[in-house]
Length: 68
Image (cartoon, rainbow, N blue to C red; front, side, top):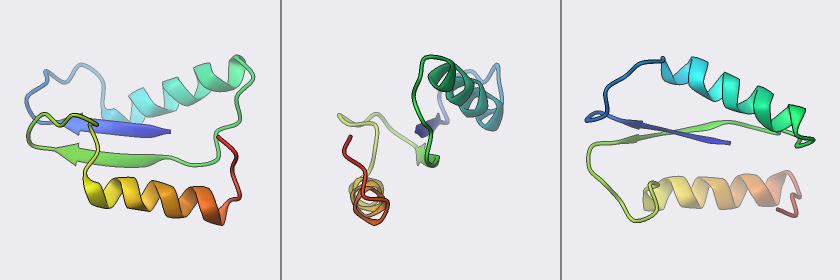
């Protein structure tokens, strides 16, 4: 799972709590959460992830031998 922290958004929940809740929802729907990554953004991005974070996710996927 990827959590994105955008400094411009009004923060109702702490990001950690929000990501935890999302993980619980995913698991209740049958998904297996194998990791969590946080991306801090100062401006809008097309992908919501920076180049380095995308590379980190690619490496994590290979290391964990994930298929999705």
